[in-house]
Structure formats: structure tokens, C-alpha cells
Length: 333
Ligand code: HEM
Picture 1 (cartoon, rainbow, N blue to C red):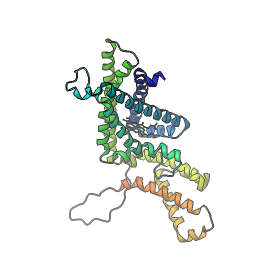
Picture 2 (tube, rainbow, N blue to C red):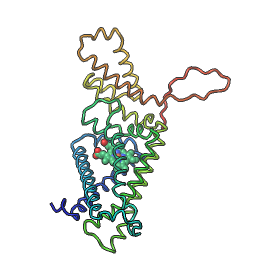
Picture 3 (cartoon, protein in one colour):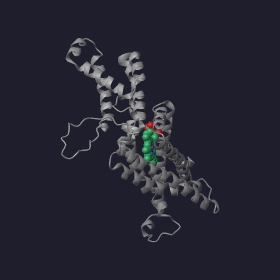
Picture 4 (tube, rainbow, N blue to C red):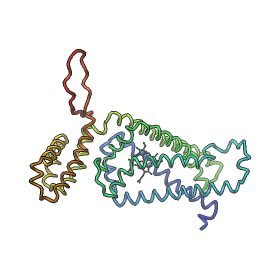
């Protein structure tokens, strides 16, 4: 009860939940850095985390910390405003020692929350949530790099992320040392040191986030995540096991041994055959037939999505008549 009833207890809860969130943000920016250095490994991490019990437990725990942090932030702000009464409006010159961020933690928190809503819609809802709901989507839920492609090829994403990062920098810069103060580490020697450590820690984390967002934006606009040959092989490996249910283990074995281009052609050819009126008539009594066609249509939609980036403009030679534009493979390695 002391924790929720007293001001010291509430600050203690803010500090503990804040510490967990600082650690999460630090881990998160390091994990995103993998996507810069080695995109294939990043997808492997996404597959490992996915909707497994340990990832779900971690996500639920994280969500609980975020919710508690927000509820207590609102409670503390309301309590502080009540305590100060009308005086809050009378102050025109705040002491210099009171930093701008400390006065605006709630507003900064609201900006971060708004960023988080956009961010979770762009990533979490299309990845972990899709896996939890067991939805069939054209893009595999574990293909993290393709969600980077989708998010960062949208022109406003970089702007929204930069606003979120700046708000996060101010919020964490104050929050870092103030959480130590809240748990009783209020020493005149250590607070300046913790402010310095906090400023470095938070600046490195935010600089890394900014670098990541810029790199992802550049690569997404080059369609790198759709066209890179190594990534395409990985996307193929992600979807091939799904063929087992309708087409059996033989199909899975054949597809997993073939390279990406061949699998794409095989799947498209199979769909064409199955859409042929003769095949439709032949399989009219096969109850799974419509389901198999629907499944192949989804897969072809995925291959078409990846290959939509392959159509390159052929340089036009003045005065020379041009043939009709053709899609061309582009590895972009
Ligand atoms: C370049 C910037 C960022 C990128 C590329 C990025 C990427 C991602 C991805 C791919 C996921 C989905 C993981 C999954 O569901 O498997 C995710 C989830 C998440 N992100 Fe980010 N993120 C970025 C910045 C941030 C920042 C600054 C915050 C915090 C303010 C944040 C908070 C979260 C949270 C809370 C989740 C949900 C985690 C969970 O489900 O356990 N992200 N992010």
C-alpha cells in the first residue's frame, strides 16, 4: 500500500518501471543494429522471438511495465499540481536548476506514446499479433526486414521517428538520473556523475536509433529488402514449410532444394495450371481444391510483391525505337 499511497512510493514505482524501460530501449536499439550489419541474422532473431511463449511472456511483462509507468506518471502529475495549487500559474521564472525536461516529462511521455502507437501498428501488429491470431498474410510475420521496407519506404515515417527520438532523448535524459534519486541515491557527489553517465548512455542510444532509421530509409527506398538475393532465399525458406499442409512433404522437399527464382516460377506455374478450366473441372469434387488455389494465390501475391521491385527502367537511346518494357531480375547485391 505504501507503494501506491505515498508520494515516495509512487516515485519508487516510476523509477523501477523506468529502469526496465531504459534497459528495453537499449536492448531494442542494439537488436535493430543487427538489421544494419546483417539483415538475414535480424530476420533469424525475429523468427526466434516471434510468438513463442518466452517472447509472449516478455512482451506481456513489458506492456505491464509501460502501463504502470503511464498510470503512475499521471497520478504523480495530478498530485503535484494539486499540491502546488494556483501557484503553478504564478511562477514566471523557474529556478535555473529546474531543467526544461523535468518540467515537461508528461508532455514528452505523451509524444513518445503517440510515436509508440504508430510504431506498434507498423511492426508489432503485423508481426507478433498476426502470429498470435494465426492470420494468413502475404508477407510472412517473421520477415522483419520486409516490415522495415514497408515502414521506411513511407515518406512520413522518418519524420515521425525523428520526433519520437528527440522526445525520447529529453525524457530519458532527465529520467535516467532522477530514477536513482527516487530510490534514495540522493548524493551531491553521485547525482552530477549519474547525470553525466545518463547523458552519454541516452545520447548513444538515440544516436544509434537515428542512424538506424536513416539507413533503413535509404535501403527501403532502394527496395534493398525486396531485391537482395540472400534475403530472398531466406523469405523462400520461411514460406516453403507452409506448403506441407496442402501439398505434402514431397512438395516441401522439392521447393526447399530449389533456389528462389525457380520456386517463384514453380509456384506461379502451379497456380496457372490450377486456374485452368480443365483442372477446375477435374478437381470439382476435391474439397480442398479452392483452399489450395487460395493458398497459391497468396504465395504468388508475395512473389509479385518482391518482384515488383525488379522492373528497372531501360535507358532510352534518342532516336531508337524501344521495345515494350519488361521485368528484369535484379539481385541488388
Ligand atoms: C529505428 C527505430 C526502431 C525500429 C526499426 C524498431 C523495430 C521494431 C520491430 C521490428 C518490432 C516488432 C518486434 C516483434 O513484434 O517481433 C518492434 C517492437 C516494439 N518496439 Fe520498436 N523499433 C524502433 C524504435 C523503437 C523505440 C524508440 C521504442 C520506444 C520508445 C520502441 C518500442 C517498441 C515496443 C514497445 C515494441 C513491442 C515489443 C514487444 O512486442 O515485446 N521501438 N520495434
